[in-house]
Length: 342
Ligand code: UD1
Image 1 (cartoon, rainbow, N blue to C red):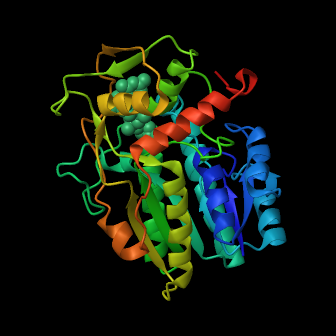
Image 2 (cartoon, rainbow, N blue to C red):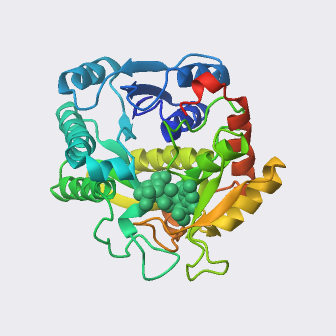
Image 3 (tube, rainbow, N blue to C red):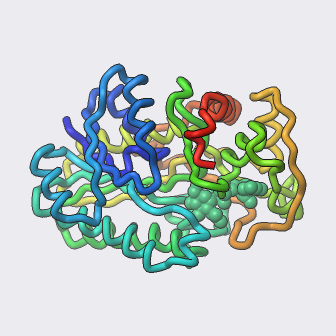
């Protein structure tokens, strides 16, 4: 069964391609390589022992996408393709609204035309802002977005909810990711941030590898046990497997129109200092870090209530923080300098 994976050469997309093949699906990647590299395809081929079909196309390009649907006749789509840099989104809002929402609408129109009902959408825990109650449940009220990027996820979810509520023949799940980290245990695919990483774990691994002088810990004056901010870090292979399970669940549901949003996290919060200490234990490296002021826009603590994923999808994260950091470090160590995009 063919499944279109937009953004399939990206971090979460590439790991999901592996999980799809392992579950017996045939992923077809659509990626414009605007923020991903072709070497990911080589890594996938080594892991899977065969190549994966890949189209170089922009999901905003309706003609190209129609052509791909016609040839591949996918049973559904897992839609990762989007811009995701929070800072850039504030400086270039139109670029983000056009790309992230334009591509979603184009995709939905073509799915409707071709009678392709099943869609998994990459959403984010960013839709919760700082929730009042932790762990955060899916029915927790959405907060005004802290960034344009976050707003594209919030609006994306609303578009999907509206389309399903109108009775259009769509079966859709938005997966609200918490903080994906780690890499495939082979060390052949992983996260490839371009330039200075915004996210904690790639910054840690690049610092330990000597590519950055020092990690800044953004704030140690939060109201948390050690003063540093708390997140729910999930191994990217657990997250990848959640997509496969969600897709199987969707395909099996009898309704013709449905929309659900589901948290994908571990249910456990870890502070920045706990991540640093866990990384040091996993890698055997001493990390050079200093405390700096809070990063504007950061929330104090957020971690998932994972009850809905367990109940409705039958999915639970299986891998530990230690395992995720071990895999992230293995990937970093195997990365050649010319491929590192630093
Ligand atoms: C960030 C984005 C979020 C996006 C997610 C995607 C912001 C404000 N939020 O989430 O919208 O969906 O990435 O993965 O950018 N930290 C440091 N030093 C660093 C980097 C991070 O101390 O150099 C801290 C942060 O303050 C935070 C934690 O590490 O407490 C995690 O940060 P990060 O990996 O950037 O993820 P989020 O901020 O949770």
